[in-house]
Image (tube, rainbow, N blue to C red; front, side, top):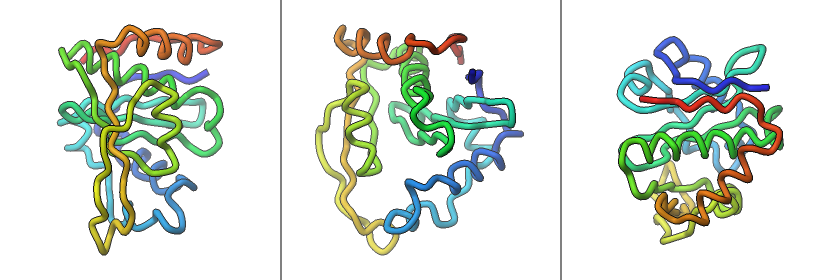
Length: 168
């Protein structure tokens, strides 16, 4: 259904548009994305995976050092398992890079999703007014835990079709 591969500099504008169109970042949470742009340099410097549908990008995930920096799924693709697939793929990239854990500073409504995917909350990042007026949960995926591997395998194999591994 969706093909996942490495993002290229040519994807920058489409990924920025996808991010800003997210209904999860409207209203109270809109300020965090004000002025934020996914640049070609960002895509060259970091490991960014993009999920492509027939009409173009429908989701993406970015790994910066040992952090899941960005994860967005188009509103119309939510509920399809694409978010779980992107997380599993980006964690596979992290493992290939020799990482033992991946940090996530989460959008508050996304905490349950990350916990369902195997992350555990380890703290809270305080607000940074004026742009960020709310606390953000900090979670960690432990890549060495066997129960994580089983949970991710269940999430990503059920009816997902093409699951190519992305190598950096």
